Image (spheres, rainbow, N blue to C red):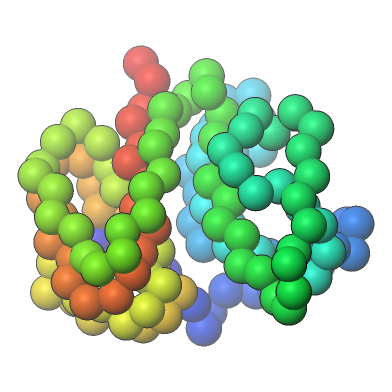
Length: 144
């Protein structure tokens, strides 16, 4: 398991000034900048609020205050992926997908303690046991 502590991520302002992002992790792609990348963002202005192709026009308006946006971007020529929210931990058997877990609150993942916004990448073939707080979990499968 590879752990990505939240405290080590650099802050990058969005080009449109509507927010900031702190990229968690990524994998190399073929013809694009990355095969996949997970980036939480903090929004102060409108932006997308659902799963959609990155080249599709989309707009959403925050209802008040700061909004945290979880972006899983991927090159569909390199990877397939799902992104699921779990409110109180999760158990998944070993399988063909690698899993990237983003802790939204402190939790324990396969015996390793993660703080809020820490992340961990588990390789394909490793079961998942997360208990504690809420999390996002991305299942990432390389295309052959």
